[in-house]
Length: 546
Ligand code: C2O
Image (tube, rainbow, N blue to C red; front, side, top):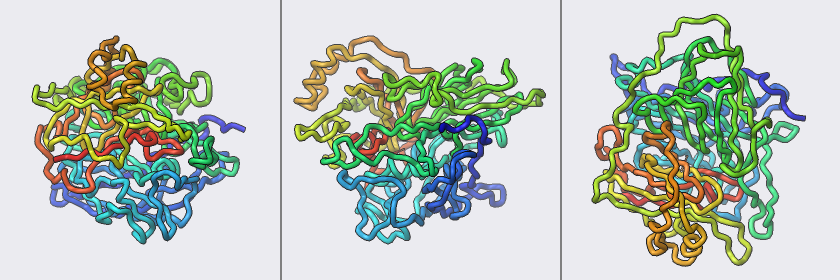
């Protein structure tokens, strides 16, 4: 039986202030946040679901975890504690490169996604730890992470990043939102604030009748990897941990920070009565000016910061819809199905006083300044690869695996131009740790098969004459993505050219910490599938900064 729509109210996660006000000045705090096994009610008619979630205690751990509100320029220290049991609640597969503790327990490590912070606080996949730090991974150094919050104000999130377990740990609930605020920039915009500034953290999940999370545990190549399945796509859309919730709103403007925290599902969002989104920012930054759009496409891990003005609503209710096929963009349609619905807003009939605005201008640094001619240009090719032994398809980046020596070696402070070529049939969300990105050009590949064949032989885009192939039609970069981002969607069959900044994009300053230290940073595809080596199977590489 399917779940009834729109019966649970949309909750908001509790917030934790990542600074304290002392004598009128914000100052650093030390937080302790734990990971706990508890249960969570995803729907009125579903039994409580066992989950792994973040909280300051077992009692207040929630799906998603508490929202952390940090202040620009004020370092925040977080001690991350693992209180998880000996056994995972979801299937895991030790035949892939995975954190495997010898004494039991669930390996975890926390990554602040989009954060500009030292490598020791980045949450390396190899810096995992089990309950009470009983056992730690080879790159583990410290219990307490430092987040300097030196980057521009924006929308980040924190989530698990343990080697080979990220997909299961995220699916179990180890994720939460993180905001960097900067009053000098935020306040003059007069955006909707406080109770009118809300998160919508969207995640698809499947459930068994007893309420437990469902993740397929039998492989279609079980002799090699017992758990192999294609991408995880859940049958239920949850927002802030509730299946298809409702929210009562007033006839006024609201700000929504929308995060797609699904493992693999892309969302193409729209409002059922034609109301537009006023997009004010992305994951990493505000825009130069708001962009009005009827639809927004969000890949896994992508964030849109939007204003919706319900005072313009021609109807008393409006549904948030999803028309994104899965896999994206050529998979199964969601239109007219339950997966095509996300949540509903009920609009109170009375008009209320609203002193918020949609600003005319936002931040100047949102516009990319083209890199100088000396800038390094790189070609990054994503392609799928099957071994002769029948090993299931893996996604590789330039034919290399995570453990191969680093080939992306930017200088701290540099701006680079990366041409990312997607030879797979699906869109992939490219995510980079530390660096901020902005797509500037999307050009179709001509002679795709010839280029593909050459790449599988030579693994070298230049030797395979990529510039002769990237000459087809161009797609526009959506206006609402023209700002600094942590995730960029890479269209299949196209070359997407991205400016990558390894510096603070608002001031052009270099990082005020040592970005070259061990264990370094990674970039990867942010789709996580049951058999993943990590995200997007093997699609993860080390960035070595010098
Ligand atoms: Cu959102 Cu490497 O992660």
